[in-house]
Amino acid sequence: MAQILIIEDENAIRRVLGKILSEESKDYNVSEAVDGLEGIELIKDNDYDLVLCDIKMPKMDGVEVLEAIKKIKPEIPVVMISGHGDLDTAVNTMRLGAFDYISKPPDLNRLLNTVRNALDRKNLVVENKRLKKKVSKNYEMIGDSELIVIIKNIIEKVAPTDARVLITGQNGTGKELVAHWLHEKSNRSNGPFIEVNCAAIPSELIESELFGHVKGSFTGANKDRAGKFEAANGGTIFLDEIGDMSAKAQAKVLRALQENKIQRVGSDKDIKVDVRILAATNKDLKKEIEDKKFREDLYHRLAVILINVPTLNDRREDIPLLINHFAEKIAKEQGNAAKEFEEKAFKLLQEYDWTGNIRELRNVVERLIILGGTTISEKDVKLFASK
Image 1 (cartoon, rainbow, N blue to C red):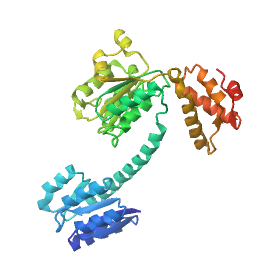
Image 2 (cartoon, rainbow, N blue to C red; image 1 turned 90 degrees about the horizontal axis):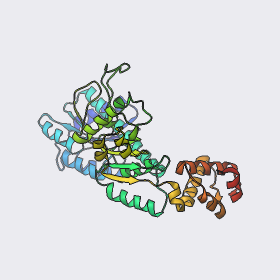
Image 3 (cartoon, rainbow, N blue to C red; image 1 turned 120 degrees about the horizontal axis):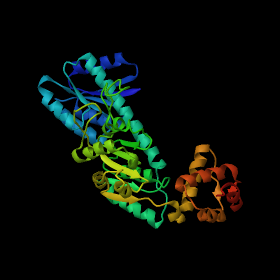
Image 4 (cartoon, helix red, strand yellow; image 1 turned 90 degrees about the vertical axis):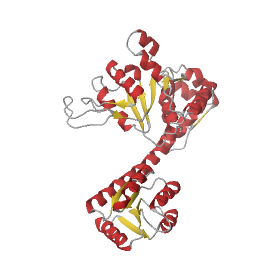
């Protein structure tokens, strides 16, 4: 049930708003406060999904209430209620973080639409926080080898900036982990993280995927559609396998980097975007430049900071840590207790040639857990993880 608080000093308007919302849905539980001070106290003690707040009130005006709410519980959407003479102030509250404003006397459809949209937004914020906690654990960087410590230190320094980062390394080394942690530790961490696998999208569709399109721009474009750059506005876009991007798409990405503007396919209208770009590739882009397959100017725009993710063979000392991490994770997924590995099993696995890197190691650990004994022995490794 959605908890809604109305902060309004005019009794008649407060009652009307409460009645409208109560009659609109049985899922709305409406509380009331006669002024800003009472409203703030209620917000401190309760979990509200939405606040409707008048602007002109005694003791504490709506702007002060809004600022207080954003400090106490910034996730709560606040809709301001404005009189005719308060519209300039109402617009200003939007800059301070208000979700929207409605005028007095309230238009029924406008009020209900605003309430629905605000509640949907609150639900999305809550869901994003839940997913973010899940993502943080899923993309944890495991290892304390010298090469991994260097990468972690670079991330700590680079993440708070908007510097573009080019992440290189073989398939399966964990380039996406680096990208996720750069975003998680950045000032954009509350914004979206949009991942695009450039190698998985057909070349004729990559522009539409990245920049969107307008209705009728090509066969199958039945309606306007926003692209990944717009979806990532205020956050981060991760262009994975950027070495596989078409030349035409490369030119458009370069323009987006230079001007912070994009154009949807089939449109000449500029759309401003505020996006941090992270890119990754398993290719040697300098060789691709020599072969005229990748733009040199785009490379230099992307590679402000270079991070090379080492192969698993180059960080063998991390293998026992990674094995234990995967063993615990797999056990949790399967609802079982984590199996332990004997020291000789660790040593044997450290000697293997891991051509598939961390991705391959994870598969081998899962195979050993399924087929091996209660404790994974050297014999189990020889039987089920032979290379």
